[in-house]
Image (tube, rainbow, N blue to C red):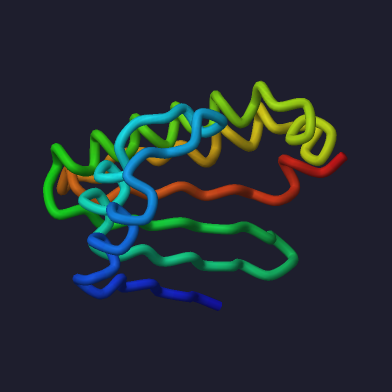
Amino acid sequence: MQIIVIPPDYAAKIIEDLMPQFPKQLGGGSTKVLTRGISWAAVGLDLPPHPAVRLTIRSADARAAEALRDKLADMLRAMGQMKEVRQFVPKFDAAAKMIVPKAQATGSCWCSMIRMAALAT
C-alpha cells in the first residue's frame, strides 16, 4: 500500500503564517525548512511476512533536501529527550536512526525504511 501527499502551493503560506517557528519541543527554528523542503512525500507499507514502512520525500533541490534532513534529525533528537516519547516508544533511539533519511543519487530525494521487526519489544 502506498500514499502520496502533494501539498498545494498555498499550503506553505498557510503553515508559515500560522506557525512561522517550530515549537521549542521540536527544536525550534523556521518552518520554511519544512514548507520549502517538501515538494511531495510518499509513505509505503509492506505487509507481513516482512512488514516495513517506507518514507520518500522529494525536495526542490539538494540544498532544500539537506536542510530538511538536518531539521528532521534535530526534531528527532528533541523528541528523544521527552519522557512521554520514551515511555510510548521504548526503542526510540533505534527508530530515530532508521527514520532520518538518506540521500539518493539525485541529491534531492530522501528515503527511509523502518523494518517493523527491528522495533519489536
